[in-house]
Length: 228
Image 1: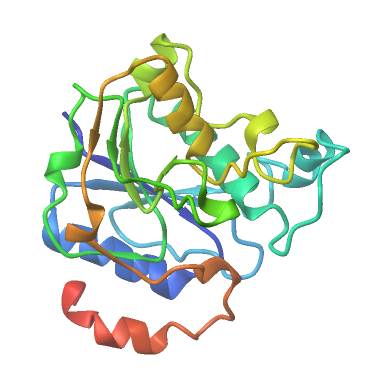
Image 2 (image 1 turned 90 degrees about the vertical axis):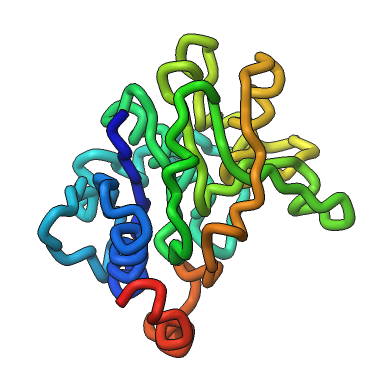
C-alpha cells in the first residue's frame, strides 16, 4: 500500500517545509503531495514533493465556488473552513484509494504508518466540546487523519457538503467545521473507523493561516529536533 500524505498549504511555506521534513524523518517511505492555495506565499519546489499548484485558481476558482452560496454569512477568515473542506474533497480525485490528510502547521513526532490502513474508512481523532457552540458538532480533526476514499465513495459519503459547511448555509443550527459533515455521514453509514489520540503523533501550532507570517518562528525553533 502506497503511503500518500496530502497537505493543504496556504501562505505558510516555512511551516509546511518543516512539516514535510518531520514526516520524512519519522516515516521516510511516505509520498508527499502539497495542494497549494496560496495567494501570497506559495510553497517552493522541494525534491521529492509533488505540488498541485492552485495559486492562480485554475483548479479551484474560489470566487466562483463562493458565488454558489448567495446567502452565505461573512466570516473573519474569508470562509476558510469551507475552502479547506472543498479542497480536501478535490484531493479525492487525485487519490481515489485514500490518503493521510495533514494540516500545514503540524509536526510529526512518531512513525505514522499506523494511519495507512484500508480496513477503515477513517483513522484519527473525533473531537467535540459540548460547552462551546463552535465545537459542539463532532468532527474528524484534519490535523492528521486517514481517509479511505474508495470505501467512502462506495458508501455514498463525500467530504464536503455545502449545506453543512459553517457560514455557507443559512438557517442551520449546527456549526460544521472541517471534517464535521464527513464524520457525521461515516457514522450514519456505519462505516468502520478507528479513533486514536493523534497527540501521540503530532505537535500542532494552530490557526497558522490567520496569523501574521513569521509569528511561528519561536515555535519552529522549539520543535526543531522533530524535523532537522
